[in-house]
Length: 238
Ligand SMILES: [Fe+2]
Image 1 (cartoon, rainbow, N blue to C red):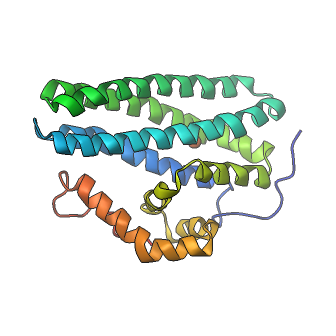
Image 2 (image 1 turned 90 degrees about the vertical axis):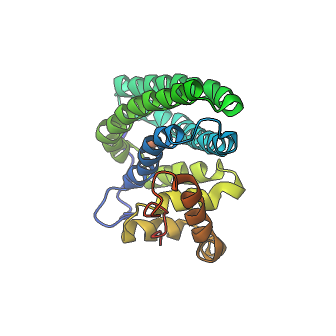
């Protein structure tokens, strides 16, 4: 079965409707690269900074869990039913399981580092984050190159829109501005216009009045150790 996707809706002009996913994946690529560097930059014994960074690692883990859960619930079952490519769906599910195991390793090492803030615990956590990133990058590349073309063929734009909505609903309300900031950080003007267009008017107002600055301040606090000049502070978000 191939439902019609010909509603003429293209979220980002010139791009397939699944391009939204590629934009979201940029967040996970960027943050998964930053996390091990940030962890390694924490001085031995600085338990306060270790605690703050551990909280951010947990936010990242929650964000990735939400992303994968949404795919597990809303994309794979439809592809299984319609695309006749169970091999690819199985590959996605196996990769999610592999990533989950890596994330469990990260989760298990966090409290040890928070308690001791010592070098062995720090390096062990950073190594687990490196391993996680390797598994994640393989998965994101496969998903974008092999699975998104299938989605374009077999899911409707309305079904796809539900994926985006559900993903946002799973993010706690008090984290949504930060999530928006993370998405907008590397978005082009047209991509940003699309994402901001999905946000209710009051949310857009809130983003411009408060959210944008909150996100920039959070980036400075987190990334300052790597980039004291402040070049990576997310300030250029629209
Ligand atoms: Fe994805």
